[in-house]
Image 1: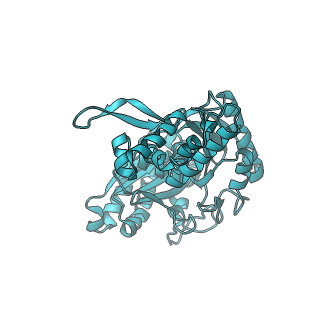
Image 2 (image 1 turned 90 degrees about the vertical axis):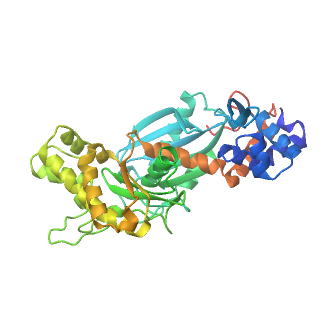
Image 3 (image 1 turned 60 degrees about the horizontal axis):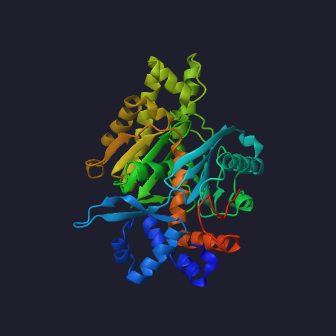
Length: 420
């Protein structure tokens, strides 16, 4: 349906944001459910749904749902309706991906970089990498829904800026969103990598756990918290920074943040590698630690067990304050399995009050590469398909269709707004 053929067609699309959001978020996946959840008349729902289907944004899938009578066709977002661009900024690599709305990877690449390159050069490198991904993939599918960046640093999510000291030297309070919007002209979201890992684990593996603590134990240590089904970020993005809670002792080790006795300085991958080097082993990072554990090196196993108890000690305090129903432990050191997990469980159950621990479950995250990248994709999609995001998205599509010679608001095979 050519959207610009009539004002009513364009109006039907731009007014369909509520219908689109209900379908995209899974709150209503049939025509009858749309009628019930939207409170709109059957004629209005049909008109707006037809506009979304004509724009190739929504499709009636072949699978059906049991309805007690005749089968009901399922409404779903057309996976070719759009794409997202995401980047996980690590300590030495940039992992970029072009993703579909599931989110699922369409294309990806890894680039080397150094924090010393600075934010401006790094953001330009990411933008160039995104353009190459789009070019190699033929432009992606449909419209660019948005861009997401994952950073290994505390992030003020509302402003999209790194806050406070971190390993991202030179990034503190730098505008990240502005330059990326200049490159691509779409919504941009920035968050801490552990929050994004938490989001992914919750949405994909533990959706029933509306109060969940995720602990990432890798080169560094951090945590993310799901409270009543939503990421809890705190006032300025500093929540979950358990790696820099300090323990007093006579031999408190120096942390890379400059303080003494931090959890990280005792139990993070870099700290265990440091201690292994003093015993003559070759270990530079968390991956090297796990390699030694997998080789059954007693010293490495002993240190990983000890790290688990340190993490368990601080986790017990978090459990007393937040009372999660589930704790999920992930990150590179989680590959050590029970060598790490047993220590965490021991201290949590030993120190926690029975009310907070009697139904508490502590498990390892399912192994998967770069879940921060998938969490970033999920963040972008969640925002694009939210009620407010759906309004902005459909307005962009209608505007692009009005500017197009064909007047079509269609997928990648027709004229739809692109950001490449």
